[in-house]
Image: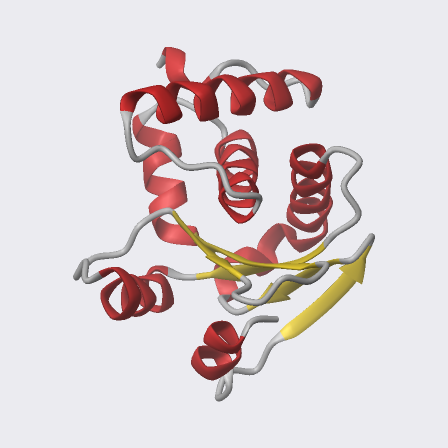
Length: 164
């Protein structure tokens, strides 16, 4: 786990599960209702995004309050967002952290007429791709990243999330 996440989760009581070098940390109670499927989905999404690359990362199942705080602190945006990625600064097998905001993902899934599971899967893949160096700062990079997300999601049986 990166120093950023360690410092911000230090006071929280966190459940952790590790498999395939993917650490899943529960930070928010709403995720508990179906924790096993979320963990299975998170691992599958991360592994699909990683391809054959041997790496380690942490996925934090958080709430809007934590994500809002991190978004304000590190991105200067005073609001929650659906997913944040914090790449590890030093080169190593540890890629970094992906943090998901339950309430925002739930709201977006409903607004976009998607299942929570498929939307969360997409956002995990999106976050892991950021850890791998992909970005969407310009139109060309955004298109390339979207195409990669679509390809990975298709392998997991999830339709193109950009056709809403």
